[in-house]
Length: 192
Ligand SMILES: Nc1ncnc2c1ncn2[C@@H]1O[C@H](COP(=O)(O)OP(=O)(O)O)[C@@H](O)[C@H]1O
Ligand SMILES: Cc1cn([C@H]2C[C@H](O)[C@@H](COP(=O)(O)O)O2)c(=O)[nH]c1=O
Ligand SMILES: [Zn+2]
Image: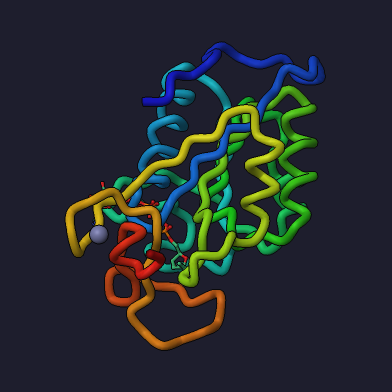
């Protein structure tokens, strides 16, 4: 389990912020882990702002919701730079479904961390074809802490790192749940 390096309040402008990235396949627990860390920050009386891309409307417009139905309020935004506008004087900024943001998200999270904020990001590291997803590789590079979580392969019960798409769609972005995707291990995904 990830243990927070520091749970106390950050001071704005001290340059003591940092970036945490939680990545993995679908159903690996990224959103649950994001919510767990954000709830602990709230318990510590910190000001928390949470964002998700407007494109992700699967469960709720204004909540981040895990597959297991744990949830936390959030602000849907169109563009990464909107996060800077709405982060205000928060101590902690949470971002879910980061793979859907434009490349600008990298400078946005760096700016927030440089302002002294703790930034916690969750996102899919690979798409349905096993290729890196959007800005996630660069976010890995700039993050102080990277946590890779895993689902359980629905075929063999092993550790799943891949999100297998059940349909023949070839577009990168196809929103969905268990109706459209299965978490699978390398072998059952067909990589080896
Ligand atoms: N094959 C699976 N492996 C692991 N968890 C699964 C699986 N299928 C359903 N789940 C559920 O998904 C939850 C994780 O959901 P969530 O945090 O939303 O994942 P992610 O954001 O990574 O897609 C688990 O706690 C579990 O209840
Ligand atoms: C693999 C893959 C996934 N998506 C979509 C499907 C879901 O709507 C989200 C991922 O949500 P989760 O919280 O990680 O379960 O992304 C996609 O658009 N393209 C893909 O290749
Ligand atoms: Zn498997």
